[in-house]
Length: 201
Ligand SMILES: [Fe+2]
Image 1 (cartoon, rainbow, N blue to C red):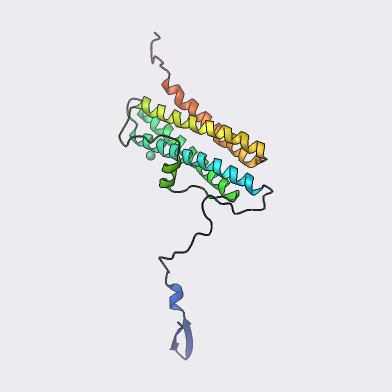
Image 2 (image 1 turned 135 degrees about the vertical axis):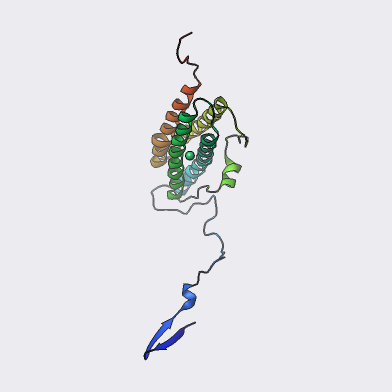
């Protein structure tokens, strides 16, 4: 609806409805989860579909590991508190970066990535930890188990991607997911080696 006022013989028009936010809008989805919106990337829909499914599993597990790191960053205790508090957050940040890379790889293949916590919880292969606080060796063991689940899936998916001609997915999995997880495993696992602090036994 147009509104007009007259001021000093000049006429101004307004469209006040255009400034009003139209909230609460709903419509049908434009792409269903599990489908491919084919992009001109020289990969067949079937190849994209396969890579998207495998990447979504790795994504769900990586998002779970990311959150496990933050839980442990907050709840860590004991005489290694300071170094583990910082280390867990460093690994968390690196997992955050991986989550974005994996999710965007899924999107660039024409698929849809998991995004919300409830969908991640339903689909991850990593066991749900208790809400309560656990001792450091248990925290480390949980993280190492999660890393191993991701590494196993990522290696199998990398080989499959190479076999299917999806070199970009293979590269992401090998260069980023596998290498980052292997590095983090090393940094965690060395904390579980019994090492006398002063005098050797
Ligand atoms: Fe923090």
